[in-house]
Image 1 (cartoon, rainbow, N blue to C red):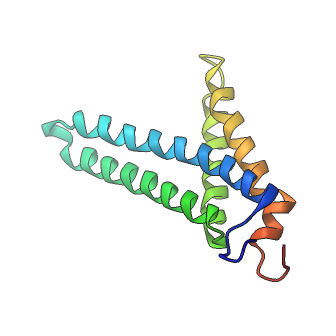
Image 2 (cartoon, rainbow, N blue to C red):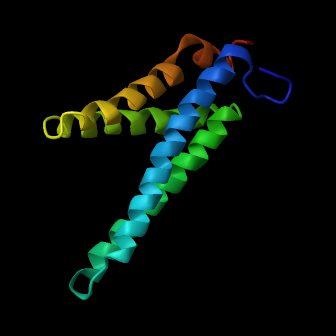
Length: 131
């Protein structure tokens, strides 16, 4: 880590890769929130508003955690790993038709998981051992 607590070297590169992938996922959630808000109708106002708020909170939370993990905050890695595991479950659910969709969802999640769980990142985010 550098003197400011930010990871450096390979760990920083891996964290930036993971953060970029998570940021794209977060933007997707925010776009889905806008689409959902645009399609709220009179007979499902409660569901539409609730879904919109849920998507906004998830998108904003992922963006915040992605930013914090690049700054060296170890706590932020856990929600990012959890989110990638959920995305992998979603990709499994999407297998089949069209055939290209599941890999498009799964491959970035696997890349982010590998980056977040790699030994250099683990060492950089550990408070017990200097990097």
